[in-house]
Length: 107
Ligand code: SF4
Image (tube, rainbow, N blue to C red; front, top):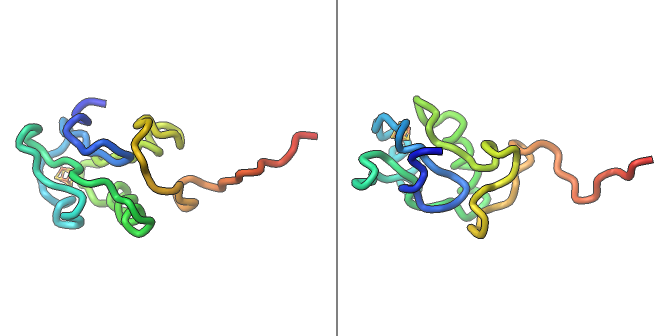
């Protein structure tokens, strides 16, 4: 995806090529979003770390951007992150569906 490189690496990112610089994300969560001079766009400046922060960020991904250019790698890649080696929070059942560590045995 274009425009991803200006974000702090991690699960959430803004496509800086799509951002219309409205500032809504920073208004909602100034701890996670800020203006990037390099990108001439808003970008993720801090990844959420706690469950509460992750839930806040997931809400912003869902409905916080008027042009839907804030992304969650887990949604973009069928539940798999592509930012290997970058720590992130737990998968939340509300967005990821039912999660089982012990899937039922095939008969
Ligand atoms: S809410 Fe969306 S369009 Fe507005 S500044 Fe943030 S990323 Fe850009």
